[in-house]
Image (tube, rainbow, N blue to C red):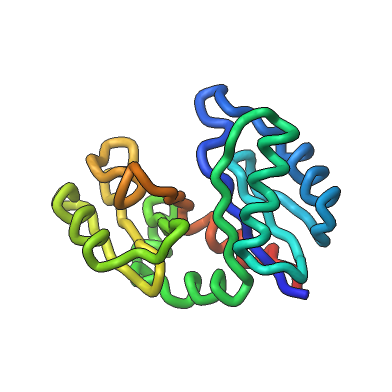
Length: 176
């Protein structure tokens, strides 16, 4: 049995696509996932399962659509992958000083150097974009709300972003 992090994209934003975390925990438990917990209301789910990450993505997406009546993209990462994100953060100093301005961006596919270059062309002088493994890290020196960088390399693909504080909290919550 392994621990997993599931990130739900685009829920509970601006009053749209409401998905209460208590209902998400209930749904996940009903699917046979164990040690289920959530972190804040933006779609962060931690659990244990014997299934593969790709099977879990499909299972959660289908169950959410059936129960709540709207589609939600779900990205699932195993505990080992999540530990690699935490260990591989290329923006350690910024993460310590302003953890809410350092963002981890992951997608349904692995990030490439081309993705990073595309984001760098949009970056301001007070922003930095790096790739580490399959993830993209972004430093929003002036805050993400003022940035011209989208939250992912392509709006036609599934990407989601979490700040460093959330990355750390989810890592601490993973089942042993």
